[in-house]
Image (cartoon, rainbow, N blue to C red):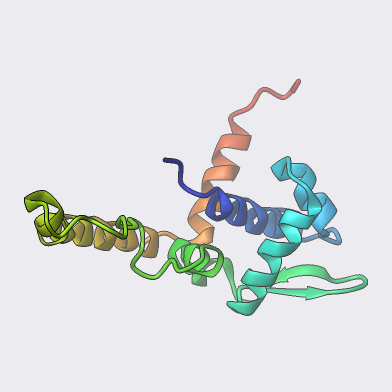
Length: 148
């Protein structure tokens, strides 16, 4: 099972908005950085706009952050773009067999561990902001050779 890439693409998108803020940031520019179709970027932008993370304007402004990067947590971004992200890192299979001793008890046996993992995941994302990601990008970009 693979997790959705919407979250990481959304973080990448927001990093582009900040890094290229002295340009008109468009879905085409962002899509070229992510390596995806502009339609995918526009769908993510709709969700980020609904969550009040970005503003999208036609014309000279393009895409901008709705608030400072240090006020946007990774949890904000995750919840904005992942469907039903609230408390659902793990989706439990729907029809365990109640006639089976394992099927009957699996939810009660596994739910506490999954709940703790969900809380740890959310705490970690809540403790990091877009500014932290941007700092990492700056650090990594600064470490590249000048002839690249």
